[in-house]
Image (cartoon, rainbow, N blue to C red; front, side):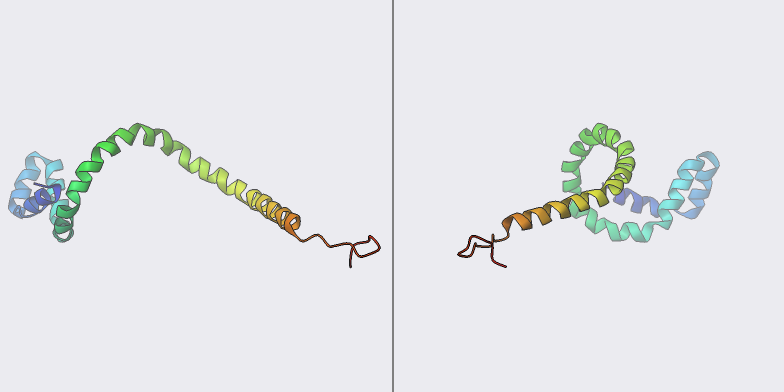
Length: 120
């Protein structure tokens, strides 16, 4: 049974039962209320989940293996983006300069006229 199937099953719990559960397990009751409110979304997701569950099952071990790497990367991403944004204008200027130099280097060299001077 998928998580969405469980959610749809729990969404069918009567409100009276949720009220009773709330007396002894407020967190579980809050979870049930959220699931009940999300029932239309869960119903839309159910057929999609059937299709993607095998892919998720295949990808989950890889995601879990990548978690230490992701934990290392997360605090660096935002500061790195700030740095890249600060460096970008200078990099664009450098690229434009190199392109201009390359264009000048590949421009045809004027052929000398019969007196040895370049043609005008």
